[in-house]
Image (cartoon, rainbow, N blue to C red):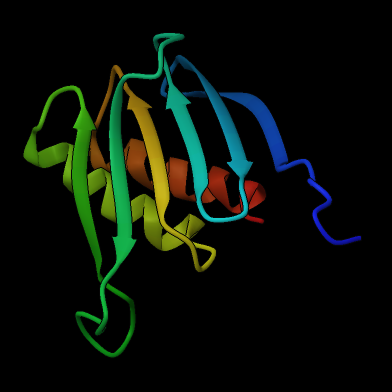
Length: 119
């Protein structure tokens, strides 16, 4: 029906990663996706992620990241780009991230867990 407002798709869950309780919320709006990953029960740093026009190489797309709120650390951009390659659904992503452990092992585990949160 024209003008009808539809509810966004959402999914939430929790897991334990390297001994840290991790909450995950994914909401798919009409024009953006929002994903919050937290081990502090807070939204943390907000990152806006857009797909680049051309891929970095022939295997995977590149992403541009911009910190909207919070600490602008290089590791945050690396994590955001890597997670975006798993959760990207054709729309920009707003990512809230607050991790106690930002090691590569945690990032790989998050990539596996986030496969269940794709829209």
